[in-house]
Amino acid sequence: MTQTGGQDGGCHAARPCTDAGGTYTGPVHLSAEHYRAASRERIAAARNEYEAERYADCIYLSGLAVESMLRAYRCRKNSEFDSRHDLADLLKSSGLEGFVPKKRRQQVAALLGEVWSRWKNNYRFASNDRLATAFRDLGLFHGLSGNPLKANALTILESGFELVGIGDSRWQLTPVNE
Image (cartoon, rainbow, N blue to C red; front, side, top):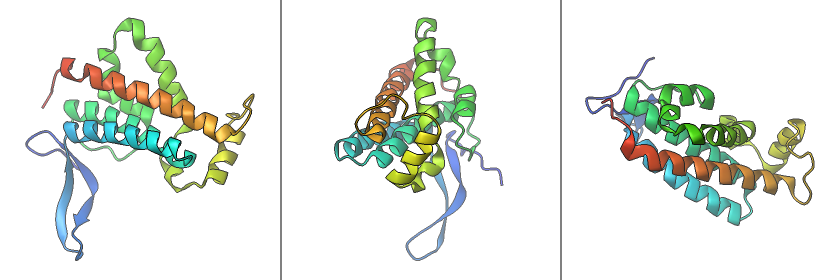
């Protein structure tokens, strides 16, 4: 099922919404501004999870914050909702890369690489132990001492924080295609 944006250019979720009684209430409407706000909220929540030593949650929320910012930019260009969680495709379709100054593009690519290597949408279901195993298998524990999951959580948190900041700072400079 293809979901498209409403008259104001927002994006709609692919699943119907119901109220507490199970009554259908229509699709969730998320505008570009909603995604942008969610991005900032998720990166703040990720920081809180890191400080509380809930590293799996920090990792998931950091990636979600980046995905939300990319969706915000994409939604400004194209209101058709894409239910995939492919950060590389979202970057291409968002157009954000074109609004990053050339001198910062290499830095942005490196930051996105840090996020991409540590985030998958299904990590929201992973325990710390399962996530540690996945990261170990990916070679993300190599050369780390102490708690390697903590170190990886800090890497994705810092990268996500920087990317959300870049997206947020470029927001007013980007054209709206709504």
